[in-house]
Length: 115
Length: 116
Image 1 (tube, chains in turn orange, yellow):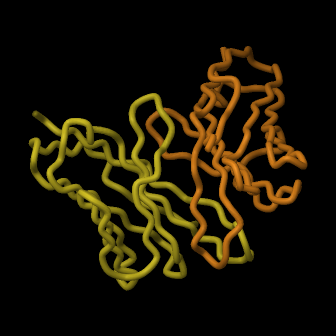
Image 2 (cartoon, chains in turn blue, brown; image 1 turned 90 degrees about the vertical axis):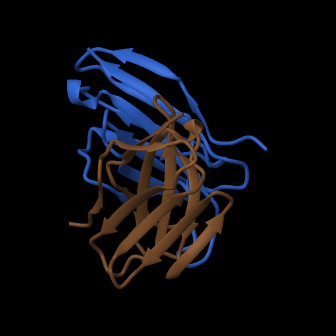
């Protein structure tokens, strides 16, 4: 059973460029969440996708956008890159559930460096 | 502002000892709590989840939850050098949706070092 996969593993961009990160959820999972983890910090929630729609969004600017496809895979797009966007970008997937007993499983992450 | 607080450490324990990691959270309405382990340069790996007051044991790990005190802890018995990592406490604050729901608010993590 394949876990959460992400691509690419590493990425180097320059300021002002645009980047697209990709995520495939764990088999049987329909919800994808994206997090940004700066060095020495805990992950910060960017947004969550369910049924191809953005269901929740954290405190991130509109430069961060996403998409979910019918097969539940997802993309994170970041426009007009800033040096401060350098971080580990994590994708987490979760399964349909009831009430609050949801658990999120993380992929290996994409390390983005902005020069 | 919903917050999760952890001591950043580092917490250093000798091999074979009990490591105790602590976490407090700000929202009394929170209902699900998670501990993740993160090795340097890797992604977070789920260790434990807990939803009810009291203790939950899984092998060498015990999670403890006290909702009245808004406190959750993780005990690691018989600590091994391989347990050296950063431990992240995460809380699911958002209970507004049915099905898969909510986002996780993470603490900054506690770095644990187990000395041989």
